[in-house]
Image (cartoon, rainbow, N blue to C red):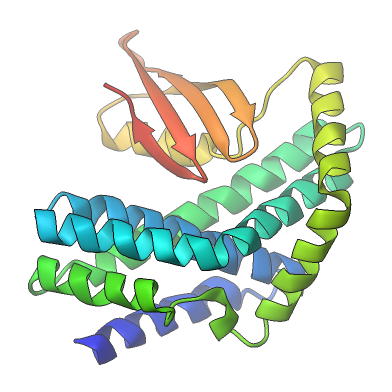
Length: 235
């Protein structure tokens, strides 16, 4: 079972990070954020299977985040830095860049989770893979090429992260518009739930924590909350 899980994750990781149009920094950012969204979505899916799977899922996620969370935050900083660099007076350019990259990240994570849980005993699979997250086999340091880039981004985040976030806030205040990084992913999500021709509006966009409202063609609406790109429709 473990060999199968490892093979699936390796193949998907290669497809996610090998795009010829992406810079090394973008590859490292995608790598870290895809891993984060994947483990969050796996934890959600596994938690619905059984008490044992739920305990394993959240133990694995918490252990993984404790070791890797600062690097995920560094990757998010890198995305924010690119947004500001592209933006300046052209906020929509930077916003669309962030939305597009986030859409790819979420789509890749969803593909991973679906592939992992499509066959066999899902509870057994969850116990195996979440055990790997718990014990460190899925840590970001495992990629020897991208890990040093994430460490550099972490150092840059510690040195000037607040300046970048402040500049982002000033740009939003000046334009009086909010752009959610998860807007494209949310649009696809609500369509899958039967919301035709959704109009997605950002209510809150504070970095990785976002609140969006999707108005459907029949005038019904859905409220969606996103935390680190893992989005859920609110009841």
